[in-house]
Image 1: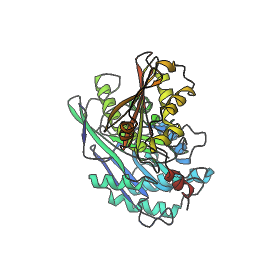
Image 2: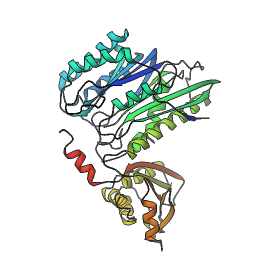
Image 3: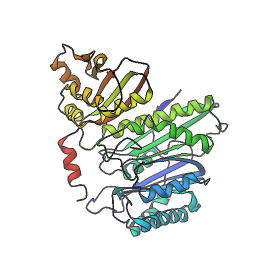
Image 4: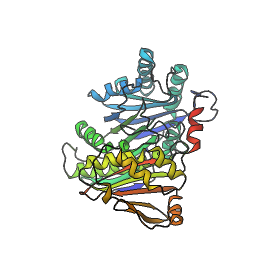
Amino acid sequence: MVEIITGGITAPKGYSATGLRVGIKEGQSTKKDMAMVYSERPCKAAGTFTTNVVKAAPVKFDRQVIDSNEEVCAIVVNSGVANACTGSEGMSYCEEMAKTTANVLNISEKGVLVASTGVIGKQLPMDKINEGIKLMAPKLGTSFEDATLAAEAIMTTDTHSKQIAVKTTIDGKEVTIGGMCKGSGMIHINMCTMLGFITTDVAISKKMLQKALSDDIVDTFNMVSVDGDTSTNDTVLLLANGLAGNKEITEENEDYIEFTKALNTVTTFLSRQIAGDGEGCTALFEVKVLNAATKEKAVTLSKSIVTSSLTKAAIYGHDANWGRILCAMGYSGAEFDPEVVDIYFESAAGKIKIVENGVATDYSEEEATKILSESEVTAIADIKEGSQCATAWGCDLTYDYVKINADYRS
């Protein structure tokens, strides 16, 4: 049974972390901007990355590490500068970050992963980066406070840190998974700028670890959209050091299924946190499509609704403008019968059916507005043709989104 516990990236056995400020982005006098995660035992590593053709240097660097058979001991992250569109110099800086980290931690530089987030097109200030790495190493700690320092350091326009830890039992051993992520803007389905880092002490083969992550993100991180922009830096990294002491998971057995349940709890929580902290947003917008003939159709329809600018604006205005939802479904490319569709709105304030068989019900606008005024709002579309469903997460579209992105570099 999966249980959520207090903790973050340092919750599993053998992991430590920290975060601090080195002044990577000028004009931000107090924000922490570098983080480090370290495992006392070398880890199996898995990763998923942006589908954007324009890939940042850290994405290219980490793919090489993940695709190799190298075990990983550390991740070093900076915020403020994305190290994207930086050519061969940017790649050399990734290598330099790994080398400096390896030297201060006395590990192999082949076992270091790097990540960056922030402004595209600028070169990393390597004097500050290298100094930050040297300062972080002796500060590494295993407490929740240490995990929080790291989670805060990877933020850009996020309004709060995003972290979680869970535990479960596998092969009679307690297994823990901890995670942190950042993401608020430039977030879109297809490895929805987001960075995610997950640690676990489970013993599992690299093949099964990668399968677990790749299969999971289809229904979690890839179902998040804030603004329709797929970043150049999107990365999710998953490390497993085996210190839980369970028999190594090498196939899709009961132990593997239990691990994937725990992993899904972590990634679903983090996905919702990203959506609910979209730049300038006032509400998490969840979309559920029910009873589709195929999973693919349910996914397509839910994505189309959650990314509709007009629907997102209606959610901001607490306006039950269901026509925008049906319209978004109609241009999704998925075939369905609009004359059998039921649509509901749901939140902590209640649930209301606003469309039945493609036609408006005699619903109360006042009640609908009350339901849509909560900080988490769900739209449900039942297309009545099968048994497949999908859930997507986004947020409302506000004036502040434009303000934030109009002066992001200044």
